[in-house]
Image (cartoon, rainbow over all chains, first blue to last red):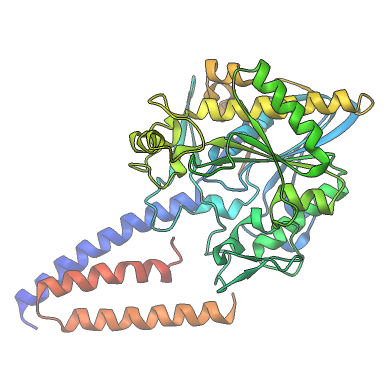
Length: 387
Length: 50
């Protein structure tokens, strides 16, 4: 090898190593980004998911579970954020609850990272941003972007076909890593199935009355701006939908969970436990296939001219204009809907109410912004945990 | 770690070595660039960075 050839290779390999180091560092820091949660005055204890299924201890999915216990007995509501972490409104609602809610009657159980592994990766080949930040009065909070599916580093390989347990229904192969296709899970299954199983154990042992799974959907998906409900929650969900649409200033529908579609929380939690299961969907243009640049700005503003164009061609199931679907609107829809569920439940079960304060409703979240409800970890010594 | 996963990493390592050998043997800078670019995702996989 001549000296010139050697120099040429050293330069090219050096550039390659630089590229490897920068991309590797980005992946490494994204997977390990610490997300602080400032425990609010209402948090009475924090457990982890392994409490309910020990084999999860030490795995990526041994997520935090926040308990907010009221002084008076009442209903228990479980709120699941981060089943699909790339739908960030649900996770942010969990943060707002953990940092602000105070329960007077009943009990609130909050999860910010239902599929924690899925928060540590972004859509492969999707050019997603690795994280996003929410501005606050004291600075900003940065969150992992996340994906819809468990990180392949934690569960691999995928099969050719995914047969859901216990129904045997055939689902898309990749959904073997989708926790919202794995309910009710099984103890000897994949990490994703074990995660769903652990949550089912939690729901049974903690005697959860209402389980709410928070999601967002692309505007080209027909199940959007709605509450999907198990048949045991149909009356309540319909009442919530009518009340919100009439009083709150935004439209939200009701969909009944198909009895033969398996693996989803709104079907399986209701079928395999005492809890009434509901799933909320808010609009997220970031997920639309026709979107433009997949950026942090697009994620948080929900503005996208290409999705607007798709709407002009009648290709969407939800309206969109130049104002987009900002994160404050999406989060506010979820907080108002879950508060309305608690109120409506209480009207039907006056001896078993769930009463809480400190949780902003739709208009309040839009007016003050999500960041208003995120507190400064630097001023909360001893009250900070990490997701 | 399952047997399939171990085999996967052995395969990735094997291909990485082949790419590195070809990189050393090549005499055109365009090919060098190509080998380096192809090698990067294989090395990221070996380092379990995703």
